Image 1 (cartoon, rainbow, N blue to C red):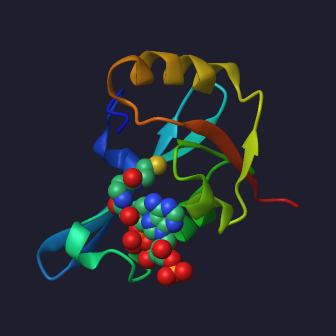
Image 2: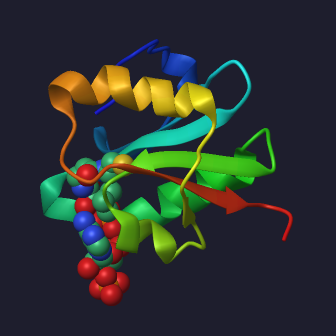
Length: 116
Ligand SMILES: CC(C)(COP(=O)(O)OP(=O)(O)OC[C@H]1O[C@@H](n2cnc3c(N)ncnc32)[C@H](O)[C@@H]1OP(=O)(O)O)[C@@H](O)C(=O)NCCC(=O)NCCS
């Protein structure tokens, strides 16, 4: 996961009792915002928690263009994200930096347009 420029104010968490069972992040860059770091604890996956987090982050996003860098292309297509060839330069640069050491194969830039 992208651990650059972390700040707790960028995160939302899904909580059950005292446990955090999921989380997601809106990372501000200079020109664009990126939805990222979506994760759900293993024993609570496939119960709609990831969907709830992604939809919430889209709703509170500060810009109409919601970018994500991900290898889970089919998962994010369900929300209406589509792949783009030439993503914003700062996201392409980020991928080069972060993926040098710790990305899974097949990470792409996707965008969801809030105004369609
Ligand atoms: C990806 C992730 C956040 C999804 O959260 P979740 O709460 O399990 O997902 P939801 O309950 O919202 O959605 C479940 C549906 O998505 C599908 N799905 C789950 N993971 C998927 C994947 N990796 N690729 C494609 N589809 C996937 C499931 O098959 C299920 O489909 P169904 O509704 O037809 O049964 C979760 O699997 C996770 O934490 N993965 C590890 C971290 C990660 O890779 N995060 C993405 C970084 S960009």
